[in-house]
Length: 200
Image (tube, rainbow, N blue to C red; front, side, top):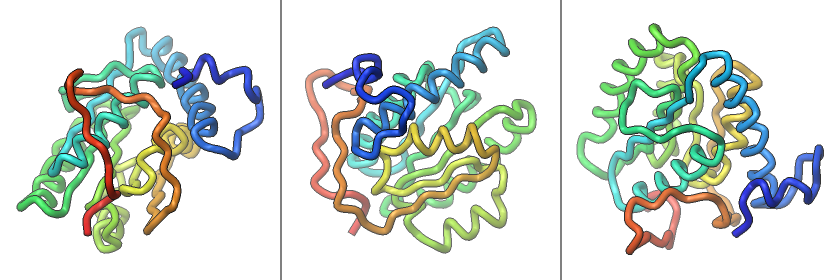
């Protein structure tokens, strides 16, 4: 697998149309923004990816953490991070309630840290009534995406940086499988393999 640095000379300046080159382009663009923000703040930026639910979510969270690390964030378990991403579930009991409860806590943190980015992804975001509720009552959330476009995290994060508003990107289905992206594995001796995306 090529790192984002090794991919830089393939098509400099233009946004590639094919994957995973397109995502590596946005990883590089986000890295520039993160470095600039770090210089302004005088410290490294941190990211926290919290997994709710099943083993498939744990596998997706490894991808999310890998992409965030490649962008330049330092991964942490603390939700006081500069970027907090909840990978949600609809199958496990009380998962939705827990997410809404944690969002209230994140809102108080964002009041103290206005540059904080809050993102939600996973199965819960595939439900239209959930997205509608978030748009109406949780307007401080910056990023919402579903199970079929986890690989697009860097591209969506770039839109958050550029648009300064809530970015919502939900795919109901896709035939695209993009695997050649950074992954931060929790265990060196085992790894999950996706046989489907989302719940059925």
